[in-house]
Length: 276
Image (cartoon, rainbow, N blue to C red; front, side, top):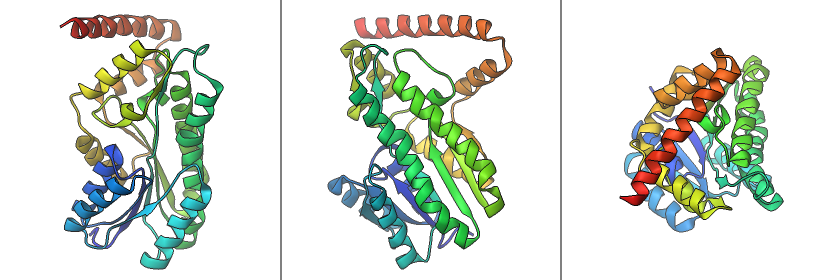
């Protein structure tokens, strides 16, 4: 049923983007990945073409709208359009509000938020002309449940959630579905390119990512299945889903008390691991 369908994925040469690309290729989709790492692109395309021979890569910087337009033009020219667009490219920044620099804020906003905005802006006209399609925006549980010392990251991911929920209503008349993906910690390369103003905070975040039980392949499968169902919100971690539910249902003072307890437990676990 999916044979011949087309998907475009930003940041598709590594991490979750690569796992998504490989999963879609394995399901018979034609996959175009957009990335700036030529070496990783070549390696990923070789893997993709083993399952989906027409799959390709294109140089794409999500901070440059003409790069995304170039990907849209390529898809129109070679495949006649696209069925699913996954705005996946993202970075992380950790640090207190008085420590994280304005440059760090501009850097993460330009990639995490405006990169998604550009992807939606560029591809909406194509999907509208086609009579439909799907936009998939990769946010994070940080967009729903906000931990301290990550205000820039939290803010960009919360904005991606807000953007996606706005477009769910705005674009449904055009037959365009919009899904927002909110995973918690999983093993990924995100921490390798992270900016952090506190070495201890950076080390803790990297440990949480590197020691996560779930890998990107599991998240990719959940995203694929959720998009196929037409889910508006794809939450991949049961414990994170419970935290979001509690935030929505409980009086906020009680929710904050529960979050303080949870943070204290995490800090104790990380201190034990660091000393072991």
